[in-house]
Image 1 (cartoon, rainbow, N blue to C red):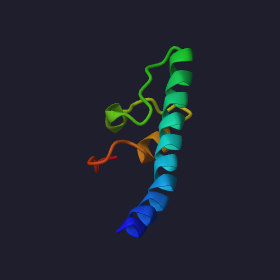
Image 2 (image 1 turned 60 degrees about the vertical axis):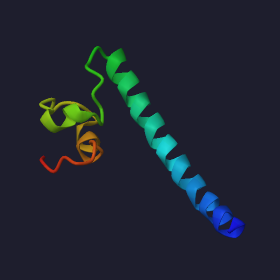
Image 3 (image 1 turned 120 degrees about the horizontal axis):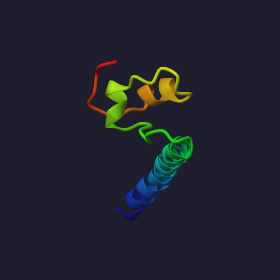
Image 4 (image 1 turned 180 degrees about the vertical axis):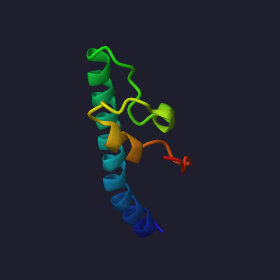
Length: 72
């Protein structure tokens, strides 16, 4: 049983690191958006209704929008 827990912990660490890395990226981009005087909407529920075609992060934002939304 302990071996299974150790294996799970070893697999979970990279996943947790990836999630934290993605979270940090989202927060950094949102900070840039605020500094530019824009709405800090990167990878938020607002991505599904984005009309800011000039946003430098738009393409990546639409790819990373919250799950459950299948509309472009």
